[in-house]
Amino acid sequence: MSAQYWGWLLAVLAMGAVTFLLRAAPVLLPKAWLKSALLHALNFALPLSVMTLLILASLSLNKATAQPLYLAAEILALLCVWLSYRQWRNVLVSMIIGVAALNGWLWVLGAG
Image (cartoon, rainbow, N blue to C red; front, top):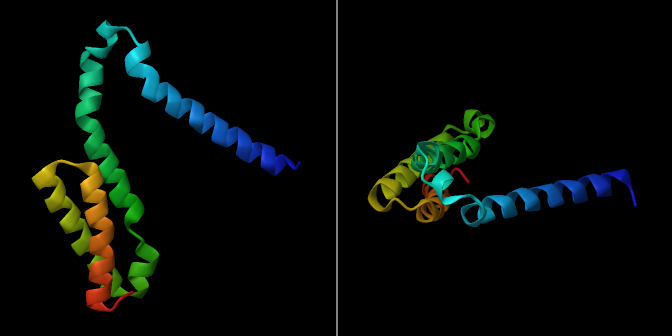
């Protein structure tokens, strides 16, 4: 097996271990740590941080400079995501609405 295969396998195992530890943390950590101000602040800021990262990752400025209608569709889809998140405070629903809205606006504007 090639070195690239082992690199991918190691990366997947590392990601799995980190995911497992993060999911198991509420059970494994002492209760006093879970009530700390730092974890409460992290719990408060995490949804906004995730949404910000998703927004930054979703903008494809190279394609938008070539097609201004594509940028308009992205901005309209982001507005839909923002409105849905304000209404329901649910990241999963907002992500689904964002994907659907982007595809819908691309179709309506003919930029797809």
